[in-house]
Length: 127
Image 1 (tube, rainbow, N blue to C red):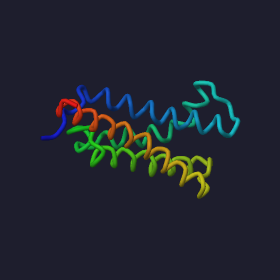
Image 2: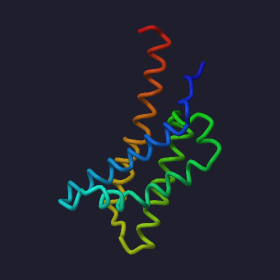
Image 3: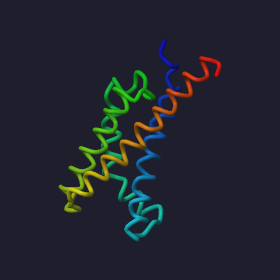
Image 4: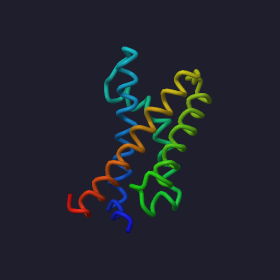
């Protein structure tokens, strides 16, 4: 039996967008760049576009809290579209940034989904 999907899906989308905002904020802070909301949002913007495009896919809406396929699709959208937009806007995407981006977004976007699944299993088993 699969866990109950996150209702409403808008809550899952909000968590994804906040996760990307956290990624951008931590990244800016670690490079001693401005951490004002507008600055962090500007950094997050290309990755938010990728998240929103992934959310346009029906497979994400079916059960948005599932690590796969929903989480993998959202992660792919965030990383691929986000990095592509950085490149076309002249912001660059050096290899170390690509690796850190993929790893951190994977931890954040797949991590919350995994925790939701685990909590659902634990609650159903009565543990």
